[in-house]
Amino acid sequence: METFLEQLNALQLDEQTVFLTLILIATILVIFTALMLLLGSKSPLTQKLEEIRKSSGGDKLRKNRRLDNTLETLAPVMQPSSSKESASIRNKLMHAGYHDANALTVFYALKAFSILMGLILAACFYFFLPDMSQLHLVMIVSVAMGLYTPNVGLKFMVDKRQSRIRGGVPDALDLLVVCTESGLGFNAALRRVADELMISHPDFADELDTVCAKIKAGVEMSTAFNELVDRTGLKEIAGLVTMLSHASKIGGSLSQTLREYTEDFRDKRNQEVEEIAAKIPTKMIFPLLIFIWPCFFIVAIGPSMLSLTATLGK
Image (cartoon, rainbow, N blue to C red; front, side, top):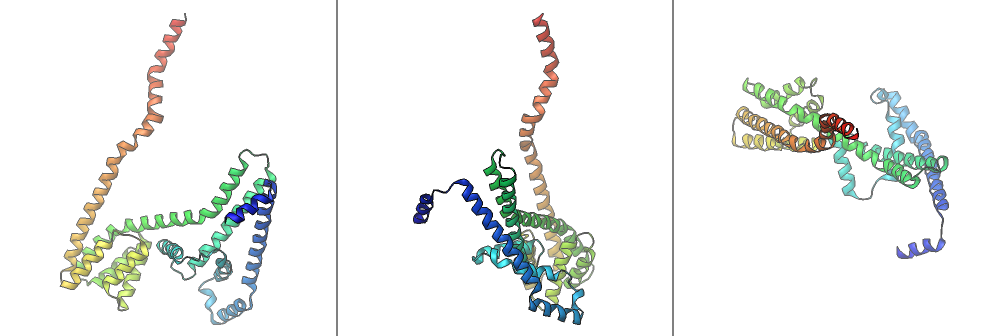
C-alpha cells in the first residue's frame, strides 16, 4: 500500500487530471451498465423462458419479471464478498417485507444505479458549475448520497413496516383472547384474526397468515412464531412465543395465557408512553431557550426598552 501511494505521489497528478480520470471511469461504468441491460433483456435464455411463460399462461402472474431479470445482471458488480453483510441486508429486506429470492439481487442492482447517478451528478457539477464555492465538498456529498441512499431508504422502509406491525399487535392479541375464550381452537382463532386484520393491519395479517400456513403444514407452533419474530424483527412478541410454547408443553390454558400476556403487554405499552411523556419537558428545554424565551423577552421588555431609550435620548 505504501509503495502504491509513493508511486501516486511520484506522478504528481493535478486535480483536473484526477477528476477527468473519475469522469472516464464513470463513463465506462455507464456504458458497461447499458451493455449489461441490453444483454440481460436480449439474451437467448431469457427469450426462451419468455416464450415458455407465454405458452403456459404464466406471464399473467408477474408482468415485471423482465425488469427483475435485467437487474439481476448488474447485481454481481455490487454484491459483497462478505456473507455477513449479505445476511444483514437480506434480514433488513425481509423485515421490510421483501421475501422474494431475488430481493437481495435487485437491491444491489439498484445500489449500482444509485452510485452511477451520484458519479454523474458529481461530473455535472464539475463541468457545468466549476466556479461553485465548495465544489469538492458538493461532489463528495453527491457521491456519498449515491452510495448510501439505498441503505437509508431500506432502513426507512423497515422502520415504517415494523411500526405498522407493532400497531397491530394489541388488536390481534385482544381478538385472539376473544376467539379462544369463545371456544375456537388456537389455529382457528389465529386464522380468524388474520382474516379480520386484513383491512386494518394488512402487514401483520399477512404474517399471521404465513404462521397459519406453517402450522397447518406441520411446523410446531413455537417454531412458526420464532420464524415470525425473525421475519418481522419485532422482539416485543418474543415473550408471547415463550409463553405459548410453555403453555402448550405443560397443557395450560391458551386463553388464560393470552389474557395474561395481553394485560402485561398493555401495561408495558402504558409504561413506554409514560416514559415518552416524562422525556418531553427535558426535550422542550432547547426549543424554549432558542426560540420561545427570546421572543417572550422581546415582546415583554422591548416596548419599555424603546420608551426608556427615547426618554434618555431626549
